[in-house]
Length: 239
Image 1: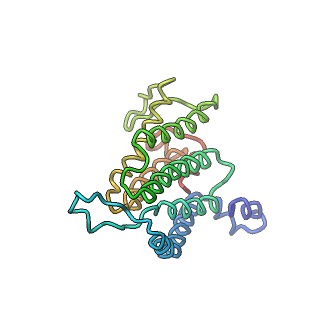
Image 2: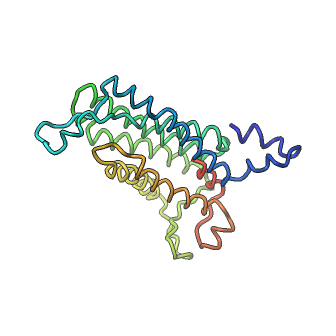
């Protein structure tokens, strides 16, 4: 939003050219999400505590009883902070930004439904494992399918350190991409653990993905590092 409001006036005020740079807007988006989390975090935690949205612990797991009542549904704050920062600082005409945001919010909705069932039913089961995986596969499959509708979209697989070896997955690109998206999401979720401190592994994973998409979206850097260049994908760094 800010990008679209200020960049058109860059010709009159050269200082506004700074908003063209992905690096600047990425830092601004990170700072915005951080400020939102700091300001709203305590209030959201207090609100969830009042609603008794705490983690249910099986009675037979004695070692975990001290963690009973740990507030859950903290993903609401993450979705809010990241969603607002992306809408403020990203180029909203970029298809990759919308694709990433919608997949993120879609997976967040599955997490919310899971936590909601846990809180209401007071048990750790929530959504069934099959139900969660099915929902994630459906969302990821829809996103990848939309990308594949573009005739210019490449289904080649870039392998690090092998510049000339880029196998074309063809029809196998869809299941492979879905596997990567769902696997990465659940990898973070499993690392999260009992306390629900998802932001830790999320920052690590997101940081690496941000580096990859920035390099892939920068033609000169991608060529120097022998990485497949993807036009426009660098904007996802703002995410």
